[in-house]
Length: 244
Image 1: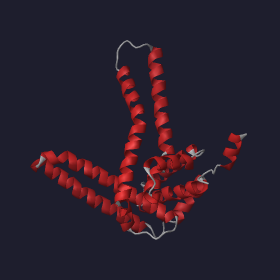
Image 2 (image 1 turned 120 degrees about the horizontal axis):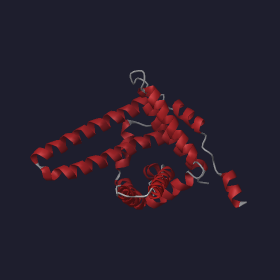
Image 3 (image 1 turned 90 degrees about the horizontal axis):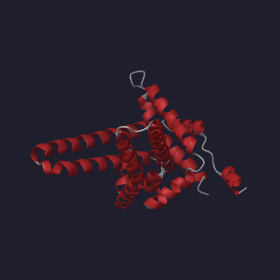
Image 4 (image 1 turned 180 degrees about the horizontal axis):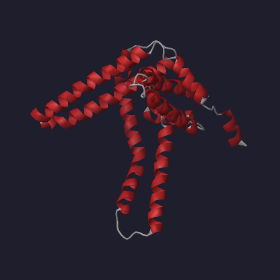
């Protein structure tokens, strides 16, 4: 009875309506999001150039610069996600909005979130590596191979499930400055009973982007800002309705 009441009271993300709502918010935001993309490209190009230069002049700096570049890329991408969230709430945005993710408090919490996610997926990764090494051994029976394949599939499905449930953790950290563990718990709570709907949202977004690439990629002018805002709209709907 309790489970039935929970299912009835849990918000079900309307996939098509979410996509439509995001599309309606693309107008007036394309330039901001594309300016953000262009800025990311320029910054990453500059960091890549410095990394390549260090490889020749100071090889000892190559690895640190590569790590810094990857983390900066992560922060910039997170900043674009924040633009999508702000647009979903009809908050004015500009390309400078993306640098919200560079605030010291948020940076530290994002680092903590990355560490937590690595620790969560580490057991899965270790088992997958062990399974891969076992599969390379000779003289394995058909039943053993089949068991390894089934276990491999189960682990991949488990990682996918956890990834979907943690999908909004980054957004929660950057938008609400929540702690890493609280952000993960809130994301799990917000996405309950919506696993397949989020998967469906992802699939439809990929299909739309692929179709938009057909006419010389011109459709990407609209589709890339659209998927950015889709994240924000889904975030808003789920956190507003499933966090009560």
